[in-house]
Length: 362
Image (cartoon, rainbow, N blue to C red):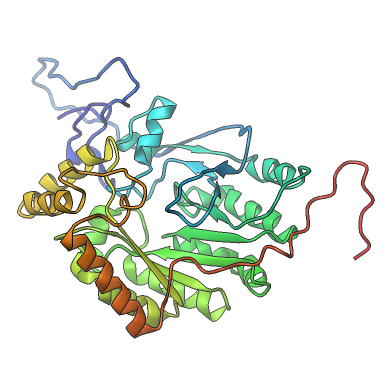
């Protein structure tokens, strides 16, 4: 039995976790391996518990110039994500912290409790121009740690107070807690929510996304958001060839029935260390499909596990990728779903007052 800081981790040591590996980050010079100590005695290893450290952020808004996504700024109240989605494209970011993109990503988290105050300062800077901000572009803003810390809610309060448009992306049912803020902002054209749904199979979801809400629970969140007047986008993402791609139409139909008004889909992305983590998961949890899934994925990524090229990294290339895109387009047309992110207003923005400025009476 290998200890939890080894490259491969025994399943008995990681119940309810997604990754089966805990390799060192790509920037680390040292590697750790489990070894038999020679004592023929049973050893009870400590369970993997979630640890949350805190970080003092120097900035709030993360900027990007990527030509193939529909936003240029984002907010991320947490680093790492306890949902433990084995395929998460954000895992390599933990290497920048000196941690593993494997189990460390889902058990050693970083919270940013001062982010709302930093955001308010940035919104008040001279020359700031509003545009929709993505809340949860990297890791989920409604993961379990948010229940106690409330950083996401305080970020929404700042955005609401200054009438700044926001797009929330999550698979967490905790988003329902903030319906009061989201409904108020949505009534002004300032908020929309994307709910991610990878599969309708509860067993498969439990294996791939062990601490995320079940698919049926996410659909109930769509219903509650829609009933409160919040526009919802159902995100059939990621689509995994030969494993979940056959569910594309069913996922979109379920989202539409729950009240979603828009949809999007992204092909599975396996950047850097994620490829090894996902392959190990397939070998362990889907051994009969592992070779077929990876062969089909490589066919859609130009012969590689992942093609990072802008314009094709999220859609793939080749005939199978084109077929998946066409299926998505036809399903959206049939169901009356808009494609992509919903437009939001930017003309209502009211920047925070700067020191010395006179406050408005209205």
